[in-house]
Image (cartoon, rainbow over all chains, first blue to last red; front, top):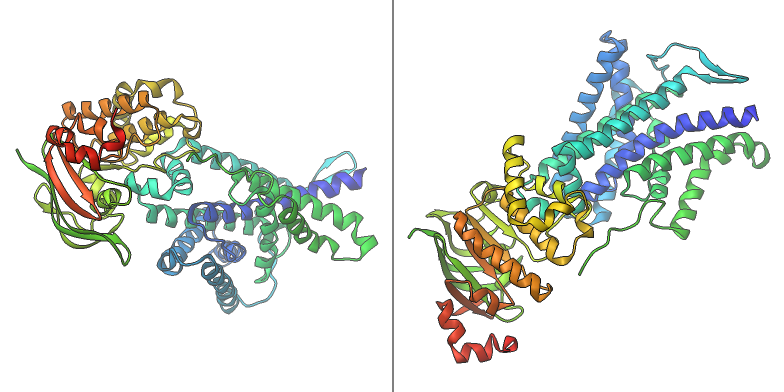
Length: 294
Length: 239
């Protein structure tokens, strides 16, 4: 029983990271229709930025965290303006290929700047664990879960109680009507990329904290994609829940299936779920389409 | 009487597909002007070209004496022009209040509140539905929401594309009546209508489009009384 609880809590922690990365996927897809396969790399770059700010510029963790969000947001905005904006209205296949190319570019440039070595992440969280009976939950996992909960709450408030957040939802629902209202759709696209990159950066910092800092960590971020499909492509709550489910299943499979089916089963399970969801319920858990009157 | 819209020799369409040919048309301050014509004659395309959504090829489009051809929609909204499309004119997943807020996304909060209250006075049916999503509204209520949201930007010139399409007769009457009442608030109206008889009854003047060209223009009352026009363009609506 303790093993089950321990594995579940670890799964929730990694699931929180998937949720944040999935959220970035969903925000961009919902608003702009672009399936951004570079979201994992934006996450990775965010973690590297924090790493450099702390280790090279000796910033405090809090200051480095804030600066990372701003810099990652700027990177996201820059990517949208320079790479995606000129391609608006191009076929989806073109856009997917561009984001895959962007992912490769970001990985290569990160390797050129920081090398392809693996680094220990300068964790802002002290070592140790919270003990729940026989179960020890590492503080870094508690931190990851707490950050995700707070962030989810802030995002909910942003999207429902600020004019900018509502405008983002409006553009996501009806770009045409938004344009007619005088909402600058271009600006909303840029802001959406900035927000998604900042969320990715938070996911990257949390992931590096519970695992490692490496240029290939973007591939781990890609495991959030099944979470996006499971949640329903355009659903923010779906992305959050999908991430948690994938993290949980991966963690439990690592404990219970890997010894039977061989190590690595847990790593492919997310993609098995992706296939099953696409076959049985392509709209995902929360992917119900809005009623459209004709 | 000053000229709000002055269009001369306008050619336009979608991409390389030309729909409009040499359109000349004007709307004066405080007027209610209706464009009628059969399906596919280019009525909606005309409004879309004016509002920068469809392609403008050639010809002048002046708003209060200044050329607005090729302007972005947000620039036109800031200039006091608003457009209510026939379909896809609300944000279905946002509630009524949020939809109205989106009409004045750049306004200071107090002014926005004032404008929302004013819009709700004009369309009181929306008041009890403020927290319901637009997707849950009836067709007529949706149209009211689309018009009231356009009013939040405080336009002086309103373009409407078939606002009564697919509505019940009761709602058709109500919508046209409310649109007409906007003139008392200093708003000039240009409307494209299938339900031409209802709209022309409230209009000052009318234009008839066929095959992308203006084929006739006259006072609205003259159009309604013309037996030939009744036969060819209003015939289906005879009592």
